[in-house]
Image (cartoon, rainbow, N blue to C red; front, side, top):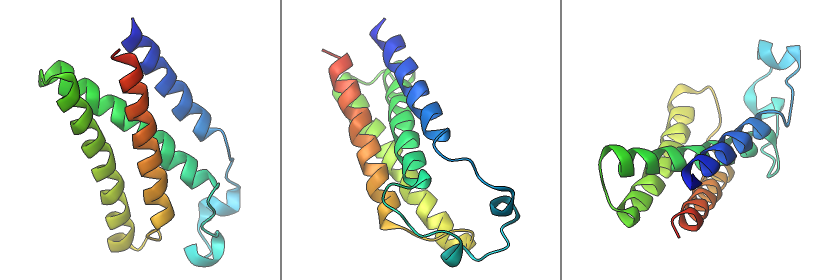
Length: 127
């Protein structure tokens, strides 16, 4: 039952993060270079997306490690944190290589915060 509650919470958090900002039609055209289009704000939509995705990926990683790989709780939590944060790092590498975005240490901090929050939720639910 707790797993269902936690999973529901993760879905709600990730859905709410997607409702923070609505892109304008000009944003979708990508006429402006990334550096002049948007500053890298600490509380921007992108940071909320990184946070929510990391929370979700931590929960998903825990589920996969615990239920599919049959690891114990502690190993599953560690695997979930590693899975979530490694995908955040890969996203920044992709931004650098593809030139479609900017590499941002603020994004990585949002990823760490989301993974930490997801870890805290898993710790609370496993008591």
